[in-house]
Amino acid sequence: MHGFFNIDKPPGITSFDVIRQLKRKLPPRSKLGHLGTLDPMAAGVLPIAAGNATRVIKYIEKSQKEYIASAVLGAVSDTQDAWGNITYSRKKIEIAEEPLQQVLQQFIGTIEQIPPMYSAVHHEGCRLYELARQGMEVKRASRPATILNIELLEIAPAPELPRLTFKVNCSQGTYVRTLVHDIGQVLGTGAYLSSLTRTLSGIFELQQSLALNEIMAARDINEYLLPVDYPLAHLALYALSPDEAHHIMQGRSIKCKIPPDSKRLRLYLNNELRAIARYDHESGALKPETVFTPF
Image 1 (spheres, rainbow, N blue to C red):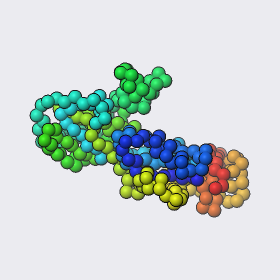
Image 2 (image 1 turned 30 degrees about the horizontal axis):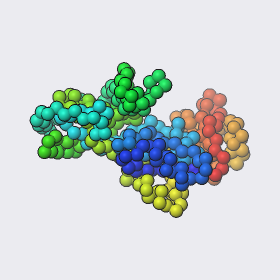
Image 3 (image 1 turned 30 degrees about the vertical axis):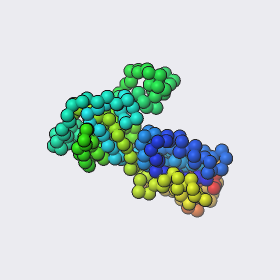
Image 4 (image 1 turned 60 degrees about the vertical axis):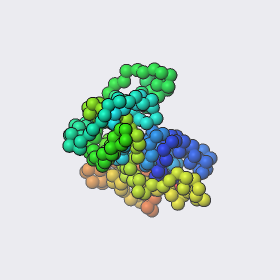
């Protein structure tokens, strides 16, 4: 079984929980991998690669992400989300749209984020969340993230604390809960993430995703499998002749003429993906990097 599952992960489970469940539906020793984790609290798009698709993950472009996030103002969390220990400011919070929009605009562009302690970042061989669970906090270096757009969707006054809902388009590796926390600091109110849904991960969209329980209940999950080359449309395509395919499948280079802007290509025989190769324009050689046995 080779291809991608576009799964709508429910909140309350980890990305690895999804993989563990899927393995029960797949043949023994099937390889699975995901294209970027989602926090247990978060829901939404979680692309899962199966079989040969795990071998093309490295060729997928660093993808844009889109999230719908809700934030509570007037409090902070030690995990920066609703699952942590909440500390309330006990101040009356009144937020007008215009000054809020001005603050949100400050975060558009390349920003620096300090990874939260409750994250999977490594520190001296340990995950930060493992240290956090032991009550430890260590110094973390900031990391760049790119916020492409923030669209305010709603300001909902609540009996106690107001809630914001916004859509954010950002680069891979962005911590939305840290973004919410930092927005709260600039507002002077404090804020924590109350809910998060990923609606886009590169080419994978929430509208085309399938609920995990729907896939688990299916008699044949092959019908939900997207092709191995589904996220590789950015790579040029080259149709092999049978003789060329023989050389490529043996790991040998072939001579051919490729458009000058092509560096890495998808190679096909009879409309079946057989390899991903790099083209050397000086020598005119197409050298296979990853070869797939027929399936």
